[in-house]
Length: 88
Image (tube, rainbow, N blue to C red; front, side, top):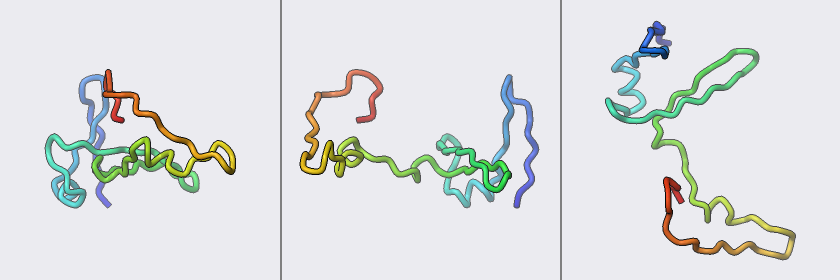
């Protein structure tokens, strides 16, 4: 377990990730990480993982097994190219 000191960084608070931990996560300067809060048995924790390790699904994968009722299957329409910052 590493003990890190929270430092002031502008109006925010920041942690410096030691090299041994960044090596363990296979992340480097400029890479993105995903930070998720969770509470287990009253203990608050942060889970840090490389952003590319978070499984992402396409809209088709998310709705592949979706059924309106037992006998009707949903068909997705092609709505064309994204017009903004959509990922799908």
